Amino acid sequence: VLGAPATGPVLQSTVPGLGLIPGASIPVITQSIDTAPPSECLLLKNMFDPAVETDPDFDLDIRDDVREECSKFGQVRHIFVDKNTAGFVYLRFDSITAAMGAQKALQGRWFAGKMITATFMSTQQYEMKFPE
Image (cartoon, rainbow, N blue to C red; front, side, top):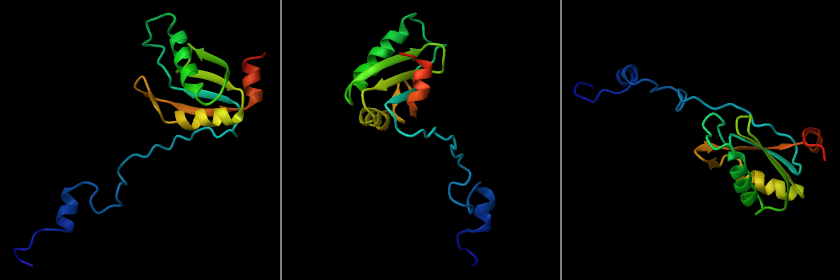
């Protein structure tokens, strides 16, 4: 129709992504989260960047912060901040229920400008890394 607003092919050719499946040009994060069955052992990742830490005892501050936060869910039996990783903090709780509460609360949460991942570790894996 003459004088009618231009729609359809004219707009589709000038606006990228218009007319396609909505959101198709938006990248989707497909990184899978390790899905070990729940146990009393958790691995937190991305808690810190060792390359930017300046305090030689930064791990002690992180350990104390994590212990304080995770104690809300149950007794923390063991905690280790691995200074030579991409922000790994290992936790062992007194029960699976406590670990599940912490995992649910911490997964995807932001800490010091970084998004945390919280995944379960098997008790066997944990004990191999930290023999009692």
